Image (cartoon, rainbow, N blue to C red; front, side):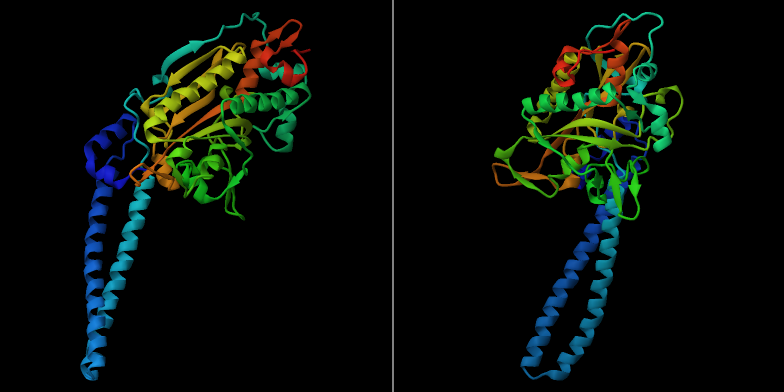
Length: 423
């Protein structure tokens, strides 16, 4: 959430930066300033009235002490109308504050200066490519056909049990998923992250703090009776471990990692792009989160990207890294890099990770601060990244590794799998 002080000081530049991310409601910036002016005016009037009531109360007390009871009673009647005015102003003040909060919640984060212009994913910029493209025969199978052939994933049974987008992993497919959990977690622990196993359900305060609410309300599964949400990513509970925290500068950075199932409604998804593992309602993911000093967040972003890239290199997958344009940027992000792997049988790129710097946007909602060397409380910066999301990684491993004798697994996974080839 943006700071009002920042909005007041840089009104026009903020509007310009919001337009870069194809945000049309820049009039909300003017509305915020107008509401803040109104709040300040009411506050001044309220403070004046409260000072008057304080002075009158002392006068009444003095009159009673000096025996001037009639005059004191008259002053008390006058005080009653003054208190009514105070209450009316307090009510108006609260209403304006709620309108300010509601308006601020609708404004996304400001894009970093390096974010390219554009409105759709077609405008994203490829910044790096790596890995070797596999050479497959013309009759190469897609991962959903390979899953059926080797009994790795049972899509139909998942649909029967729950619905589409909830696959059942079977046999070596289940072992592959379990191997990836341990592989990703071990690599994160080796990079200095602290492991957590967080809840899969969060309350509204948690979903709001990381920016899922109100922006992604329709994409989250909601449990009405308990007023709880199923998590769309481990980022939500992990980051909320630090909600309402005041850290010491020497405690930074905080590096967190967690493995969780994730749940997304993916409303409106249809067609060939949702076949097999391409788009699921439930999937597994290892997420990394860092809470850092504001001056170091972009160096940390580079390190987090290098960590994700190292995983893809170990998995021997062809990959590319994209800098997201303004129109494709998430609501809370200042800068995001997407990682995609090439799915050889589908002949398409699949997103497997997003690594983002939210700067102070989430921290403001979280009330997450640190005490600087001058003793002042400052907002921290938060970052997160998928390291990695399993379904499309599995899709690429299956398709790219297929041979006439089975499906070869990358050497990095052999110790975790207990086998080298699915056959």
